Image 1: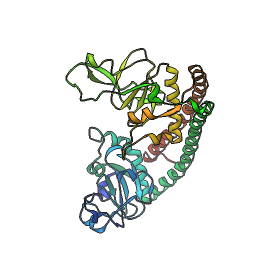
Image 2: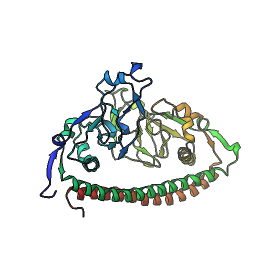
Image 3: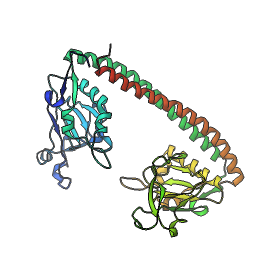
Image 4: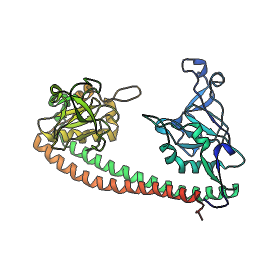
Amino acid sequence: MKADWEAQSIASFAKTGAGGTPKKSTKAFYEGGNIPWLLSGEVANANIVEAKNSITPEGLKGSSAKLFPANSVLVAMYGATAGQVGILRFEAATNQAVCAILPSDQHIPEYLYYYLLHAKPSLVAQAVGNAQPNISQAKIKSLEIPLPPLEEQQRIVAVLDEAFEGLARARAHAEANLQNARELFAGTIASEFAKIEPSGKRKVGDIAVHSLGKMLDKNKNKGTLRPYLRNLNVRWFTVDTSDLLEMRITDAEVERYTVRQGDLLICEGGYPGRSSIWEEDDEIFFQKALHRVRFEDEAYSRLLMYFLYMSDQSGALQEYCSGAGIQHFTGQSLAKFEMPFPSVSVAKKMIVTIEAMHRSSMELEGHFQQKLQDIDDLRQSLLQKAFAGELT
């Protein structure tokens, strides 16, 4: 920070406020409402120009919700969106998971927005909560920021606006190339399956043995602690074992909940249908949010994994998922899942072609993922320089 800049807490130069949620069971608070009402998940864009929900004047009066003016800077405080920031461009109310920093004559909204982007990692690191982080309004109010004169704030904003616009274009280009790489791989899978006669289609349940894993609270005081896989561990085409947990497995449960080399693991929830082969020699166990699928020949496990990926990319897999909010790929849906199953010899030839393209696709993905990371790193570097007074 420059010597002539003064660090001030947000509370010292701007008023803040949090929103509220009208009682859901009171229809008069919502039906026919014309007051925009934002949820924390909508606080993600630099310019917030619309709200997905609305409440009535009665809902506003009958709750702790309040109207915030245009150019208020909004910060999401709770859960997965904690630390996200945006600028409200119209008068609106919010729920209690959002903190609003109101306009003042000492700061430019865009300057504060950029600073809070810069401060997001440290704010989230200080957040409290077990399952999900929570940032309190008090923590935001006490946050100290360098506050140069308005003219200097405007200059910094202009430089960052231009730089971020260029970075946004670069990110969009990298994301498009990344998606193209994925589509090319999915297209290769589709072309291989297109060679199979329609009569070769069969249901997974007719030719494979599949089951869900163990409920975590079952026999929790019996058995031996053993490592197990969750749906979080199963990524597309790979199993991440860096954060394994343990649960108790009795001797009688070992066979039922064991994953062996060559087994296909499919997410039942979390990311329904995402799947990978267990490649390790060592056996491991699995939790209920995963399906374990065994074919007589591992070639079919790999074909199913690739077919699921193609179906996920095209959106066709959604037809087999159920659930109003959280989606699930149930055992019943998996049993009914239909796809072409050629002879084992043909399946192995298909896999050679698909996996050759997969290797090329992964190289491209790695290249473009690194570009995205470089762009994000550059964004943070620019913000660091901006608030250290080093932008020229």
